Amino acid sequence: MSFWTHERGLTSWLATRDHKRIGILYLATVLVFLLIGGIFALVLRLSLVTPNNALVDAHTYDKLFTQHGIVMVWLFMIPSIPSAFGNFLLPLMIGARDVAFPRLNLASYWIFVTGGIVVLVALIAGGVDTGWTFYTPYSTAAPTAVTWAVIGVFITGISSILTGLNFIATIHTMRVAGMRWRDLPLFVWNLYSTSIILVLATPVLGLALLLVGADHIWALGLFEPAQGGDPVLFQHLFWFYSHPAVYIMILPAMGVVAEVVSTFSHKRPAWYGAIVFASIGIALVGFLTWGHHMFVAGMSTFDSGLFGVLSMLVAIFSAIKVFAWTSTMYGGRITLATPLLYIFTFIFLFIFGGMSGVAVATTSLDVHWHDTYFIVAHFHFIMVGGTLTAFLAALHYWFPKLFGRMYSEAWAKVACAAVSVGFILTFTPQFLLGNAGMPRRYATYPPQYQWLHVLSTCGAVLLALGMLLTAGYLVVALVRGKRVDNPWRSASFEWRTSSPPPADNFVDAPQLRDTYAYEEVAS
View 1 (cartoon, rainbow, N blue to C red):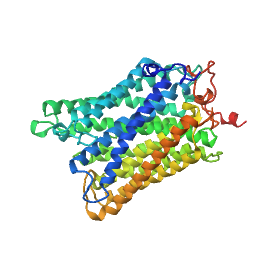
View 2 (cartoon, one colour):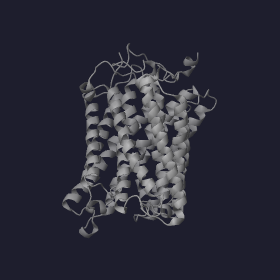
View 3 (cartoon, rainbow, N blue to C red):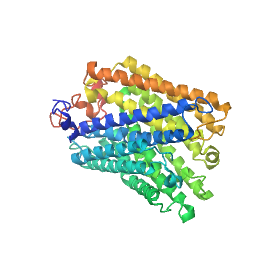
View 4 (cartoon, rainbow, N blue to C red):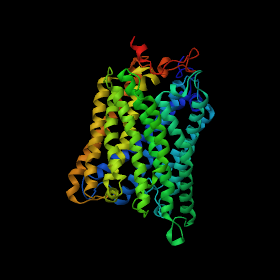
């Protein structure tokens, strides 16, 4: 009996301790937040079709881009792959019956939902216009619902810490007998690296946001220069978390890439040890690079140079992964299924966005591009595009595992093309806008930039249509999709049980086997 049917009724889901059901709950929740954040983004783009922004007033525009950022970063991108697919797949991939702390796992989900609701309350209670970074001293004095927003994000941070602790404990103690560290699937290694960041960095963000909330309520002046405060202190606290948080989003995405590339190349991953080394390296070096967000905040030339060099070091670890994925595909029997097509888009965005990241880690270039649309384009290419395409690859790759049904590959490829072309068309013009000097966050702009904004908005509409098409054929597949078990002929451990899995994951006690034994599958 599958985990879907072993217990019925709403209560059995809302109080479940089954990691698979909790993963499904996370998946449904982050999809709702993706929809909300996407609607905000589309309104923003439509409002910028004309130079004078006839759609919304300037203050509403400020609140829209703040709310878009808060929802997308804190409620979709950070939890999307680790909390949804990580919860569902981690025990299956290491041969465990569940995570180490099932009750804590359920608590982390409801804490996340609570934080999301509080953030939405902030939107309903007048919105927030500080930007998703909550920069002081404006955030401590802004006449909007800042306190509700920072409390909501603080609560979701507690959920992240609990999830990270649970994953670390599960990986250390729940592996099937005989599974060594060098036997772990690469997706698990990336979840492990992500969990380290969640546990070590998130408390710093929580502290910073609590200080902002307290300052906003009681006017303590902690970040107000006129009262002896230091606004740059908040930037240090915020980016000490938020730059490693970039890797909270991208490391799980890299894990998805490794699994999908190996499966659809029908070949074990190249450079397994190098990929593991790069994953841990990214997690650790990520704590030493926060200053490259602050080149114009008054730091010394030496500090700027040091942070720039450390930031470029991350590019070396990232390049190791890209070369490893390429080497895996080289000589493989490649199947051009939808998950792999999304990975191709991910790799393009990751390389292009990563190159622009090396550029903005160079002080002289960053001073020119700082607070322009170039930064918006860079962030969306490397982070939003990377997270979204990897999320969609994971959704299509593991959809048969989650639901035991197959979607229409033909429609999926059409949607993939729309999403990929739409995303690139949305943000490529913004590199040109930023290089021309147009500041970000502005509700109006000079008329000579209109054609680039129109191109960007056309891309956003195409992207939205691609996402709607994706939702349509996946819903149809849930009801009428062909029943399948392992349509990809994957050798990964999670595919060695039925699809969808039984309530206890495995009918018989799982036996350790090579995670990437594609030679056995081929024979």
